[in-house]
Length: 249
Ligand code: XBP
Ligand code: MG
Image (cartoon, rainbow, N blue to C red; front, side, top):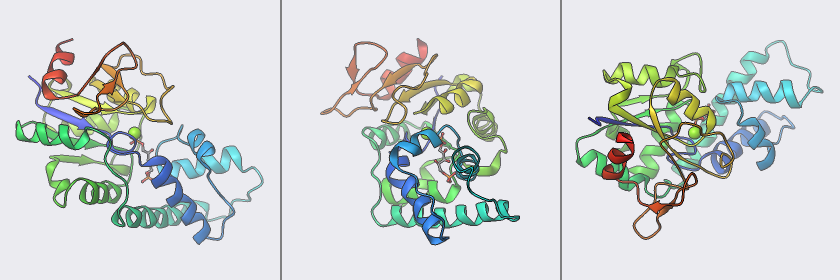
C-alpha cells in the first residue's frame, strides 16, 4: 500500500537553484568582499556537488587556483554559508519563488487522502521552512511529518543516507513510499535507499541520467497544462491514481 510521498526540495518543489540559491551565494560573496561571481552557466557545473558549503569548497579547489586560502578557510566557508542562508530566506520572504506546476495540487490531494508527506533534501532546514511557509502556506511546514534537511546526515546526496534517515523517522519501508526528484544526484540517493522515484526535470537537469525512474516528466502537470513525459510519448496530470498505477508498474 502507498503510505507516504517523499519530496526533494530544490528543483523539485520549486525552481530554486538558478534564481534563488545562486544569487544568494553571490550576495554573500559581495558582502565578504570576495570577487567570486557564479553566473548561470558556471552554477550548472557547480551543481555537481550538493550542499552549499561543499559547493563553495569545490569551486575554490576546481575553479580558483589563484585564490590563496586563509588559515581559517573552513570558518570562512561556514560564515559565508550563514550569510547566504540569510540572503536566500529573505528573498523567499519577499515574495520569492513559486512552487512548480502541480506541486500544490498533488500535496493537497495526498494530504486529503491521508497520505504522509515528508521532505528529504540537502539544503539547510531554514531554507525549507521559508519556502514552505512563503510559497505553499503559512502552515506549510506542518503538512510534512518529517523534514530531513542539511547536515543531519554527514554524507549528502547522491549518498542514500538522507532518504534512509527519513524512512527510519517515518517508521516506513521503501516499498510503502514514492520519492520525487529532479536530478541524477537526487535519484541516485533515493534509489540507493530502495525508493521508486518520479522525476520532474528542469533546465539544469534535463540531460541527467535517470535510469530506473518510474517516470521522467516535464513537471507534475495541471489539468489545463498537462505534463510531457520525456521517457515515452505521453501527457497527463500526476495524481494519486496515476502514482498508484506507476508504482504497481
Ligand atoms: C540541493 C542542494 C543544496 C542547495 C543549496 O540539492 O544541493 O545545496 O543548492 O542549499 P537537492 P544549501 O535538491 O538534491 O537536495 O546552501 O543550504 O546547502
Ligand atoms: Mg533537487
